[in-house]
Image 1 (cartoon, rainbow, N blue to C red):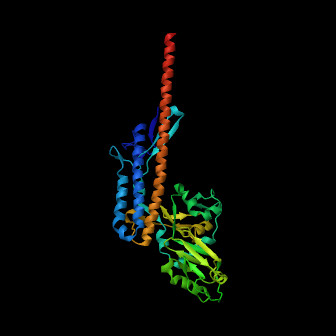
Image 2: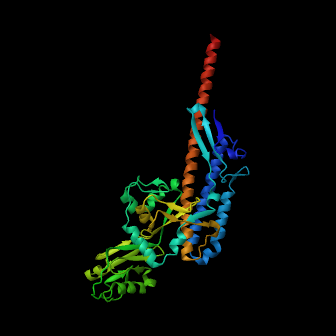
Image 3: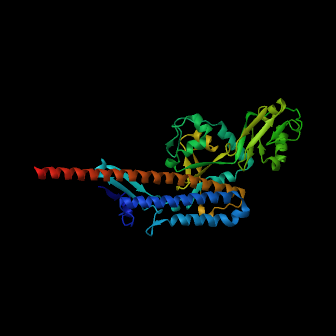
Length: 388
């Protein structure tokens, strides 16, 4: 009725390879249950990491190690499932040659190490961060742009610009790259200008905090905004003749309110309220669980748009999941980003296992039904021959 053959011949001695189709359905059920438990553990880990140093220093690393160990321990009759060894094709000759591939990925091994440009972003001072924001905002994309050899031309250039993370992450199954926002920023639509006209208290406010009076110079306005950083969480950077950039390194929302034309000319922001939601306007942090040491682009415009730097590649640094810390703000954000990517990978794997299990059940039921029908037909034909 069907034939099971190994896709990866180097694992032919794996005890799971001779499993029947029915056993493979059971194996997929066990694997799905293990993934659901790991998915739940990721939610708990995200809560721990988000609570800051007081709790995460004691709980985060051991909880992460425990979750990964539990996933590695998921087994069928004593044989581990998440080690990458189970990869078979089931050929249903009686079903028009339909083939079902059953594969369970080595997720614990995959999650053991990661590559990211996060350390580079976390090391940026306000000036470098703002410069990269300006470069990214000024860049454009084109239909021929690609990352890791995968073209983005399924997305309109405007869509790549307005939803870069969505475009990149929709291709992560091909590129192995996942994109997260690092920090948050808002850039003025016009260059700032020296007006020489003093500003009164409150004609500029940031995140609801009134900015003190300034003398009409861009440097003084920037200084006044930064003097209240502890209150509004925002850092300003810029000088006359370039767009002013407001940054929140924790990724929180940014709002600037301008109440008169003098403040608008000085800052480059229009009169009224300009705002950006949390984790929308920052730089892109790349994370990969593949052994990628750099992200390669085929377009200088694309690398500027997506990374805010010149060149044709972005360097990634390797790290071990076991060394993830959630102690400081920077480490906590890295931990949260890695956990978020893990959650995306697990959800994709879970959907794949569910789909494979449903398809295997369907094809197996159809093959059995066809076999029973053939037996009945053969029996009827035999009776007819006997009576004649």
